[in-house]
Image (tube, rainbow, N blue to C red; front, side):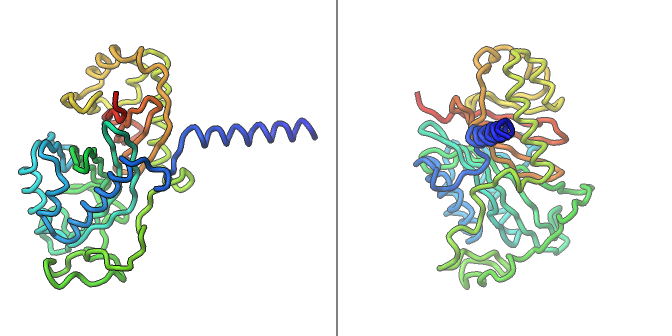
Length: 322
């Protein structure tokens, strides 16, 4: 009996250590100052979209903005290109929801991963007609400005794309939402949050027991990838990457592509990464695509996209000052 009790106690202690070692939920009360500011930027950015206010939206974007509206597109640079996209989208959609937010950061840089849903009217115009499109979004935020914005739709879209279960949804704002403001919003627009609305209508924590299968798989792949660095074998690390994986070891570097290029890059880094450890992990995704954000013990925030148990994108962002 004593032996069984001892084993049970050891198991409980081990589970407690595992939960402490890698947070999968992060309440706002645990945010540092930079993380709090970044989440406010995310909320303000979403609010500007909901208000159809392009100028307000632009006020959140840094002059040196780097952005990409779809993973199949190359990176674009500067606020002018973003303004053109924003105006085009606002002319063709009917609403937006913010559903999940996760943030890691420090004095050097802060990264937010969030999930939003874009609603498009079923008018037969464009590839998104009638769709409720869930999108994983990666932001880098510094000094109250968005310096990088990367979208990754979580369902297939465009001509010839296969339908996804539950992809087609309401093209109007959520049921029970207050009516659009009488001024500034076109007919059918998603409303600005009403005074007195619940302060937190979106999740900031996502414990692992509510992950879907794709989210569990993606988290396992990222963990295995991190562990593989301890082998000091670039080929072993590369086994978790898709053949045409996109990657970047630092925001100042251009994007690179391909497993072979990664092996060359990893060979230079492998010694420095042998003690890589995950402190925080957040994941959001579907069977089409899944995004993961981790915070490593060395202060690096890393954004991943994972599909079919292979990493299709890996971007490192140092968050600590020196």
